[in-house]
Length: 377
Image 1 (cartoon, rainbow, N blue to C red):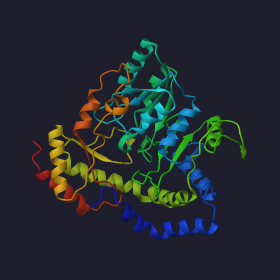
Image 2: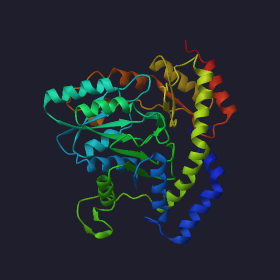
Image 3: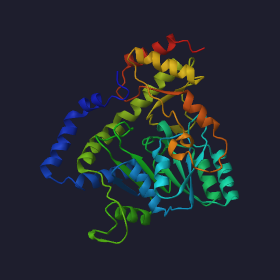
Image 4: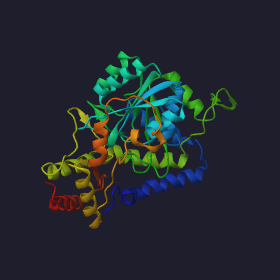
């Protein structure tokens, strides 16, 4: 049993993926070949925004978004305390200070009410200038952008949507990666839409942002002239081979994979809701299920269940055993925060189960039967 079965996916898509790779090899355009532009157009159309600019990975996408908003030393960027390290890392790399905000216990995403408390704390301290909010679509579920935007507008803050795990999710039909002033995603292989290496993308409706992003993507070039560099940029481009693979995988994702993972989630829900705390999907929200994450009553119970599942060769993962504020890299960060207790509780009680579009019914029954046999009272 695989936690996310990329081998099975490849076997199903093998003919089309192999043909896409061979086409690139025959054409010999390995950097910014036509497949990259074609993919960007398809991604922008699917998400529902004017511009998509691909790049080397999801962390670069966040870094480039922060550069576009001119984030620098002295600025405060509000980040959920329960997320992958890259969200805060990109902020630190820009020279700004990440300000950690607790999350909602049911959705795992940034809590808008706690966000406002933390913003007020930062304003009262007068040490940093609040500039932006990075909201993460954790485990495939979009953050509460309706209420986050209300807070952002009250304090004149920009929103960056970190959709690394959220691509394909939606709120009332509006798709993830369209909620931020700038939105980003990752094509890391295990993500809802993944390539066979590293890759990322940035989405925006802002023409000026898009032009700037296209420049810094290639060393700060001046339009089409890569030998006239008008600013300090990066070297962060999606390889043509990865773009060709993603073209095939995007079609499968749209045609049936997204629906399939939601069916797997519903099967889990039906079998486990009376035994463990299953994920919450608010009304009007749709998840792309990067992970199916249950909550246990304690760290001891979580760790015991994980060990028992491992004994029967059922893979699980813990996302995330340490919150942002508990990371060694931030041990000396002297910033006043609101209470972060929910994030800290989740880090000790969550467990992610196998989840992918090709997860078969009998495999789900095996996982659920084993969980039912464990004493979780």
